[in-house]
Length: 521
Image 1 (cartoon, one colour):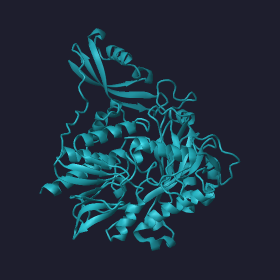
Image 2 (cartoon, helix red, strand yellow; image 1 turned 120 degrees about the vertical axis):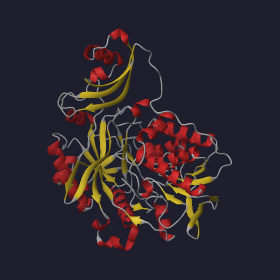
Image 3 (cartoon, helix red, strand yellow; image 1 turned 90 degrees about the vertical axis):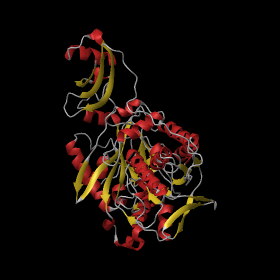
Image 4 (cartoon, one colour; image 1 turned 60 degrees about the vertical axis):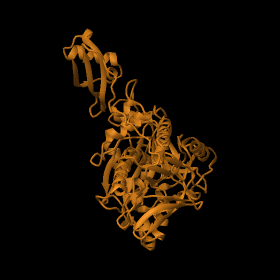
């Protein structure tokens, strides 16, 4: 007999399969000798009360052997040699999952990625960290895997209406991710493990007859009448076929190219602010209600804060427990930071973006002349100001958190995970006032809600601007193609229709399905 049961156990019990089996025998009237195996199906930590518990859904095999079936069945990808082809521009989660879905649908993907493969991309990211040398085409934003490859690998999303989250996670597992991501409430692969998974996805694309072209930057869409028929690259090479445009949120040259080509785009709201870094022990103490922190059996604690200040949201974004702050620059004259965590979330620091919601109408009047690119230009200007304040280096400006709220200079800065280094800077003065003032009020609210959170042991590092695309490429709600061009499918975070790895992957699959309908009708 197989039973599925909901359990609420201590962290220590949840950490051991034998202890779970003992718990089942004691509390669910199952003879211990009858339990042939236990499989955890779902797992979440409940830290709302002082006594932290773990909620489990388990499958218990009673008097019959435990099977090793898949939680999500793998997909059988078949060859697409000689099939109709489609162009996929960008190899982040939107482009990768679009390509895999095209293969399922019998269409050959031609993937064009401006950056390098994950191995060589890692070398370029390391040079940014250690030498301050930025390759505009290969960095934390551009290259195989997109921005998500070296931005923590978190897979939690609230976007569950547009497609199957479980299916996306299953594809990750099929390509080498741990099965735990199908179990945990907040799944996480880790920035050290995700590149290997991405490489395996590329190998599936190639094995099935798809093509992948690295260091191939698209510079023009080929348009005939009201139809996109292909793309042209920086080398002058052309590729024919309908196009899934999945360039990610930092491809500013693509937005400019679309605008210059009179292809309809729109300014879109973004969120900007700082990266906030605490010692992880403080977050553990707050979230687990104990001066001892998380102890032996609990994971590094996370947090999620949100409030309204002067009619705009102020909230935490991309929280990285046990992580690192990294330079997410893609231009030579800017400074922007992001966060990432290895799979073990084992560093001494916790960080998150702390950002303020910003609408196009919130910008100063001087940005009106940039039209639909106004938000993009504002984003760039913030990054350039941060770079100038850092002395035209990647040694980021930082300020102690309480000093930032109180409007004081910080005499010194505590140790930080940010490898290029930090230096004292009055972020409270040089950030745009409508950003800094809301952040200060938001921090005060968060400090009241979580005692110990507002502290000078934490620092704010500037700036965090790449939370989402500053542009939306409008598309038909049902057909998912561009509103005025057939054969063009704006996709994922760069098009303004997703906000993270999983939602981008879901959108990539949807665009592939829409394109398949277009080419086979």
